[in-house]
Image 1 (spheres, rainbow, N blue to C red):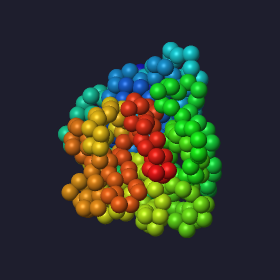
Image 2: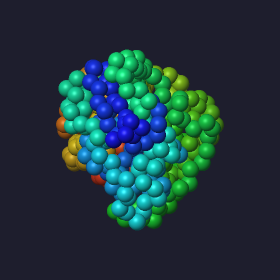
Image 3: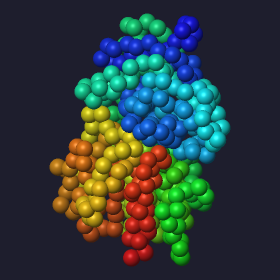
Image 4: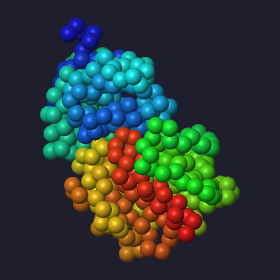
Length: 374
């Protein structure tokens, strides 16, 4: 490997690794999180919820089907850096528009392969959240470790304000024609819904349209009075990055909307709604990131395999008596869903729209519509 092909990774705990540069030249820092999905790397990299984080894939071979542009979950890559065991530079799919390394370079994503991703994953599991630097320009171990230790973590950061849309817009795009038929489209009356964009994924918006919503998307800091002026019948709170307690404008707006209209929240939206309703959130040791997390729906008794991406969670012991625990994670018993016992609002921590991931929980969008029309 020539010097210009090398890249370096350093953790705040002092571990330094040398690998191969497979993306853009440069240097990036952030919280290192591992994702256990076997596929869906393009959707992961374009998910705004990964802002402030470097993504480590646990599956050893990434990039074998290239990148299909229609799978993007937003207009750009948001992950700070990308870490894999081995990247495939030759796409083996008729849908591929570009190879993953070429896409990483085009999108400006600093990336590294040829490092021990199993060792890195075990470190994060055992030591908790670790800050990391990935660089193609600095090979000095002491300098790299200093940069990792000086990196800004996601704690206390309102990253939703950095990834949200600049102004309101209407979203009309449904699922593509290739979407599985087992997710039926809604018929009849369409429901006017305003969606708060805290870092919304496109497939969430497609899911809402598919299930019968007429959707207007607004920036994260939009006051409740502006939203009510749009005459909605329902409010949706999207996923997003960072510390939920730091999204003060969003918390204030949702606080003014609770009890006035039906509300459904996903991921960061779930955490914001929980805070508004009296619960507390905390950073998890290493979070949930992947497409294979089992969750029990306590309302139906069903176990669903879910797609997840969050580093913070709602603390069960902080749930006030007005809230009902509706979903739990079967790996660690953490809170995966809540509902208010009197106000028409509910939320889940995981991603029922998947992308990537299973469709076990896609019915929640229809459940939301049924609650609005009830």
